Length: 143
Image (cartoon, one colour):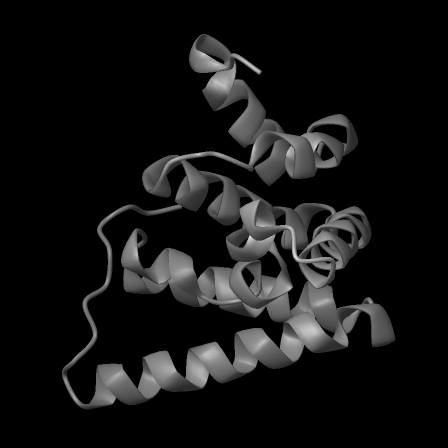
């Protein structure tokens, strides 16, 4: 699928919780390069705030493909999206706002959001430990 000019529209659509764009995530991400893959992962991370039920359902689809050894999907499932990976792109205040919003959003999903919430909390604890030790390099984008 050729995205080029519409890539920003797609990424914004996913991040803003547009069901149509989120639904396309599993078909758009295989074969993306590392940088573009990170953009999709970050967008899906924001979808966990804006449309958590839909995002979690689509991550379930991706996770099932991973279980079936679909190697193209390995870096796009729950274990990757449900981290605080965007902290390397976003500044500390933005990252902390995201963490507060995403944990509330996932907690509201109950059992369906529990695994993702656990991964995000573990990720944040590691980031906080690195930050306290002066090892954390935050990004510069704010959002």
